[in-house]
Amino acid sequence: MDRRGLSVTVVALMMVVMLTSSTTASPGIEAGIMQSPGSEDGQPDAENNTLYLFGNPQLTNCFSKFNNTDAESANYGEDSQGGTSVMDIKVTCRMDPILDDNIALMEGEMINARFALDLGGAWTNGQDGCNGDCENLNISLLKSNRVVAIKEFDSLGTGENFINWDIPVEEDLVYWNGSTENIGVEFTMKLKGVEGFLWGGEDALFGLYYSHPDNPAEYNASVTFPILNQTAFEEITGGDETSGGGGDSGMLPGFTSIIGVGGLAAAALLRRPIDD
Image 1 (cartoon, rainbow, N blue to C red):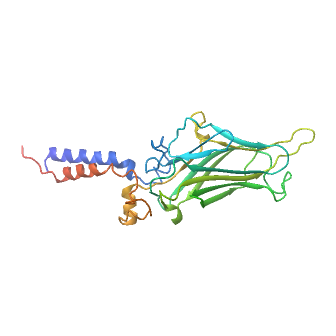
Image 2 (cartoon, helix red, strand yellow):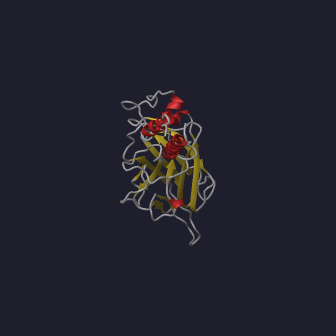
Image 3 (spheres, one colour):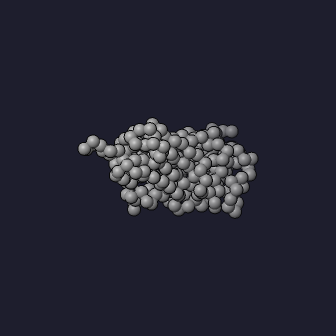
């Protein structure tokens, strides 16, 4: 191969690396950490892999999508209650638009959930009037109506709390059927107001910061999934693209960008040198 032919080959290979790095990188390193603005239709893929939470100020309408913008969402929602009766919190933030694409996650990697909460009152049994009728915060990840991961948070305090929860991707979390397994995040908690002597009492309060441009980054609610691209999916399944269990062909989204590039590389490598 002459110098000109070698140069073409090197340039072509560099283009392959540059154009495919975002789709062939380890999902746990790139897809699991980097947060993108999201897809236009709110659906997930290997590059648009962060679910953002939105809602109204009353916490009565929480929803989520793989896009970080919603013009009608508030930046924060809360529920509060005076007195010492139990305030039963259940906030479910389902994906809307509903999941329409099959996705597969990298087994052994982490789903990373980040939330900021504002709490008031009492919720620990044995303290401040909680006698077996209060509950710590529990956060659940849902497949449709089924809980596939849950964690109790027993060390939260009054005021602002920042939650960073890593969820290991085990077998039950790998495949998500776009026709039946819509993604949801659910918060449950039981709180009471605290009585004060003359003054100094505290209402029960549960507040959730949504994803919103007015919020600092650490306040924006999000869940980042290590979504596999097509190449990684085929390597793991041996090319069985129907393993996800749904859709017409089982194809996962976001996998077409490397097809033309592969042809370019092959052409450069097989190119015969031209005699000057």
